[in-house]
Image (cartoon, rainbow, N blue to C red; front, top):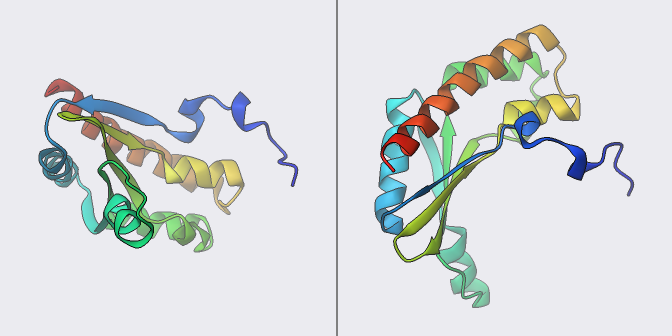
Length: 150
């Protein structure tokens, strides 16, 4: 399969990559990121630990890795309209927390709104630009708070 773009040539800002490191235990980081997301307008309707599942099912010996599926219902509703419902395949907006070392957790996020735009999903580009701006401000606020407390 040949991609129409060179993924290595894409600037991480174009797909909304955000990350930071927290100096705390893994479980504490999960709780803290959840609280910061909630404080900044996101709910967390989905969450799970791929590392626990993989360690149990295929003896993967993975370090702690957790997914918080964050969502702002207003933004999700607008994005469904702006993409003719197709963005649902990318829902939710995940915040990933993985243990890099004991007491050091990486928090990682990609903008599904920007990825949807890169993939050509929007049927209303102006509406999607507004959604990207609005969700971008929300995610920036989350990472600003995480970075401030680091």
